[in-house]
Amino acid sequence: MRTTSSSAAAATAIALIEDLQRQLTVRLEGLADDGTRLTRVEWLRDGGRHGGGVRYEVKDRGPFNGASVNMSHVHYDDDDKRPLRSATALSSIIHPAHPRAPSLHLHISWTELRSGIGSWRIMADLNPSLPDEADTERFATDVITTFVERAGTAVAEDAIRQGERYFFIPALNRHRGVFHTYLESHRSDDADADLALARQVGEVVIATYADIVGGVLRTATAPTDAERQAQLAYHTAYLFQVLTLDRGTTSGLLVHDENDLGILGSLPGRIDRALLASWASLVPPVQKPLVEAIVGCLKDEQPCPVDTDARAALARAVRTFYRAHPEALDLQARGDIVPPTVQNHGR
Image (cartoon, rainbow, N blue to C red; front, top):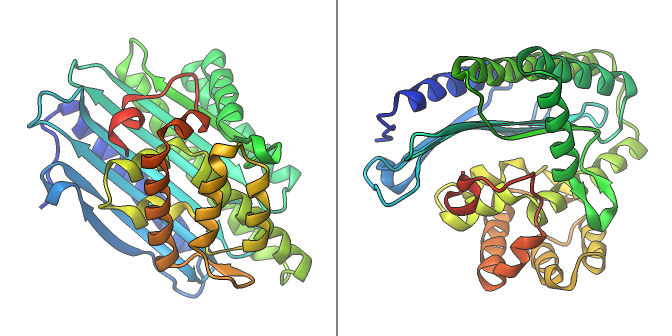
């Protein structure tokens, strides 16, 4: 049985996150004219004693290369030695099958410390294999306008600045996508306004993204070989960024092994293994064994599948590496601060 925190603030966050999860799942299934549905998977933290989560996922079916819409709620009501009381999050990654349809990452979470202080983390980024200027402009305008209207220009600019910092890949001298926002530890004097910001950003991202992908799927012709190759190369960069730089992913894998497949639901279904292997020479020396270990988890095939067995092996490899080389954590992406959920508790 999955338990929840007795905190009223956590209950409010759970209601919001579950509603956003429902909205996104419905919109994604609406993109599938073949009846494809996302599968419900539940996982438990410490047998449910400290919460858990539910995700809806699909791999390599219908219009999806892969999609994961994960709701998690972890709490420590029974352990007053922990500074974290609860953490509630929507973490979703969508990779469409058609190369012209962009990928999406959306993360909205509420963290409450035992002291009673709580804050929001809001991330939204558009990640196309083949960038489209009009789609990028539409997504960016809708998201920025929401931040400005709900929280002001300064907050919007801060979200963009932190997003540009977090999603940069130094070894490749590029960003992961074309537009990124990352607002860390957001709290104002108006809790209702903060909640409204989290809700509105989530709803705008879901609606705008679904409209963009729906438009692509209605009008795009069959992908060319060049487009498929561009998608494969981009998905390789996406996997590289997640497994070598994403602090939230690494933290989740280090804290527990009860949701490895959910945490690595962000990974695309296929990559270019040879291209990935070539990047081992571009990272700092301490990270080279990590990239080599990642490559070693994958089949020597082209394109290379990132299936359930591969994701499980990748989770073990990342966990093993950072336990042996904790100093490498200093090379991971970060915003202005590292929140307590990432420092000590995972997702």
